[in-house]
Amino acid sequence: MADFFFSKQLQVYLLCKRKLHHPRSDSAEGVNGRIGDYRSEVARRYTNQILRFNKNFGKHTINGLLMYEFNDYWAKVLDVYGTGMASGIEVLDATAIPEKAKGSINEWAVQSYIFNANYAYDGKYLAQVSFRRDDASNFGSNNKYGNFFSISAGWSINREKWFNFDFVDNLKLRASYGSVGNRPTSLYPQYDLYSASSSYSYDGVPGVLISQIGNKDLTWEKTFTTGVGLDLSMWQNRFRFNFDWYVENTDNILYQVPVSGLTGVTSRWRNIGKMKNTGIELSVGGDIIRTKDWQWSVDANMGHNSNKLKDLFKTINADGTYSTATIIIGDGSNIAGSANRLLEVGSPIDTYYMPEWAGVNPDDGAPMWYVVSKDANGNEVRTTTSRYADATYQKCGTSNPKVFGGFSTALSWKNIDFNAAFGYSLGGHIYNYSRQEYDSDGTYTDRNQMKLKKGWNRWEKPGDIATHPAAAYNNSSNSNKLSSRYIESNDFLKLRSISLGYNLKLPQYYIQNMRIFFTGENLLTFTGYSGVDPKLPPNDDTGAVMGTAGPSVYPSVRKFMFGINLTF
Image (tube, rainbow, N blue to C red; front, side, top):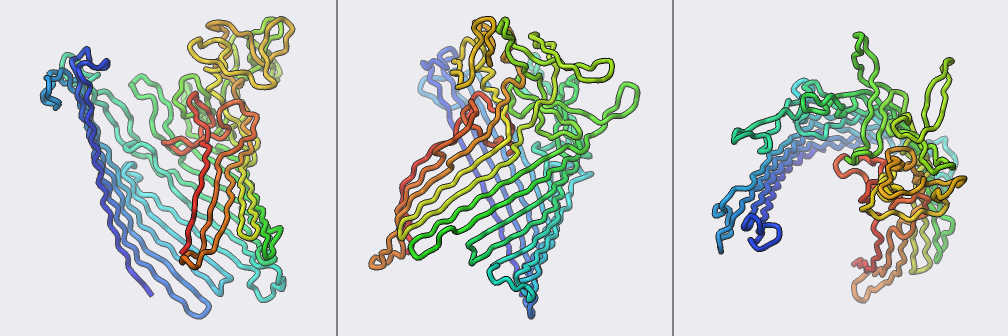
């Protein structure tokens, strides 16, 4: 049996804003009023055609699909201001001086060809294969297409005739191998680009500056994943167990590599190397009590992931030879003086790179950092210095947690139910940049300073063993500069949510069930971290967790909700 499905969507958005600053307002008094018009137009198209196939014969089941998908986006922005308003007239063409005119057009498109097929025999043997070919507009003509695939298989061992353990409800072994692709976050990395702006003009003559060196050979970042898993449930699902092991090998990593700024361009998109991720995920659960009136279940899960950079691009040396690159990058926070990361073959990609904090000199309360050198025999020698410029930049651990996961419980008695969910993370770290400003030993006199947490103390007199250097107005000791002083453990246990509900049957009102409930979210956090929240949200643009807490981090919102659910 086959069927064909076709869909097409067109979304158009128009946003208009009119800004009026009266001649008597503080912001426009000096220019006799200001009028602004902002206009944003967005058009997005999506279309797909799907051919599905489904066939059963005997104990065999086969289904699959062929699909074509197209998605594009176009956006235009116009932002115009004029100053000098005529009395009673509030339109742009009546302003005396055109103050600012800005505009932009962005567009991208992706099309995909997709195939997927599934096979099952008697519910015991399962197989799946898929293939897709993607064409993206932000690659050059040399590497516009990316091909990706997956294959997987499953074996329901408990359905075999020779399996004679009746208390086992499900025992399935799973295996898979496949690839996925990633595109650059920039729209046009393949092109040489120039930037035009009114600030580049001279004496009324417009000007442009080079803003990007394109890479027509840029290609898809690909991640190949091997996975093996086991699912087990027993005693009418009273005990549940799941285990997954995976290895991810990423090739042609996409990255904006820093380059010399002599031409006005400070980075260029490249495929820089290879990375390997290895991890496990484990979950265990069970129904401890299951009677007519009482039910109590507990579930827990944990995960572990480790990564390592396997290869980086080669750079040419002064003598003409080539060597593997080592890259020092920022943390993505766009804050000057925040944490550095080191991209080095053999190291995790989230390795902090900065001077290592050596504590406080008990004699004079001065800050200290480590200086690392080699002796005549090549052995590492570590000394301390109170001069920041002499400190040695070195690897100072990673941000990735060793173990993370959660656990939950559900309890019910007759018509009353209670649920609670917790989350935890162990072995991770955060660079708490906010302390560079709010725990600066007096460097910033225009900012409030945080209260020292329990176990911290400040140097006051010779002989004091302190965690914090001597404070001074307009402190010039550089004690708040980038260093491992501000790397903190972000181990935590969070009570993510609890809920309490009561269920009523009201058939006389044609209501099968009415549940009255109260829910709380983000209620408690147990941590030794000194900042606002030990769990950082992902970056809005990239989705990556940066491992750095800036000065404007907001905690998870605590919520309380009361509601009623009706089922008719």
